[in-house]
Image (tube, one colour):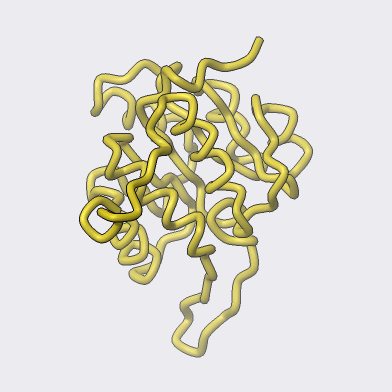
Length: 175
C-alpha cells in the first residue's frame, strides 16, 4: 500500500549518507568535514517555512553539524545529535509534538535507520542506501544521499500537500 504523503506533518532526517554522501574528511583538530547539498538544504528550509516540523536524528555530533542544522531552520529542540537507538529518539520526538508515527516521514540510509524507516508513516531511502534500509523504506529515491535525495522526497511530500508552490516576485520574503 502506498503511504499517504498528504498526511505527513513532520520529517526527520539522518545526516551521514542522507544529507551528505557519507564521506568524512578528518581534520587536524579531530573534527570531520561533511558536505551537504544546497538543494537538499533549500528543501528542508522550504518545508520548515511551510509548517512542516523538521528534525535531525544522527549519530554524528559536532558543533558544525549543530550550526548547519540551525541554519536550515531546524529548531533546537528537534536536533538530536549523537543518538544511538534512533527508534526511542523517534518516539520521543513524536510524543513531544503530539504526532502519531504515521504522520512522520523519515529519511535513512543504513541499518541503524531500519527500525524508524519501518515505524514511520513513510520511510525514504536514498538510491545508494544499504539494501537493508531500502528494504525497510516505503520509497527509494532516484537520487543518492547528499546529491538531491532529500530534495526529491520533500518535493513529493509538499506536492502531495499542495505546498510546493512558489511566487518568484516574493522569493526573498517567503523563502
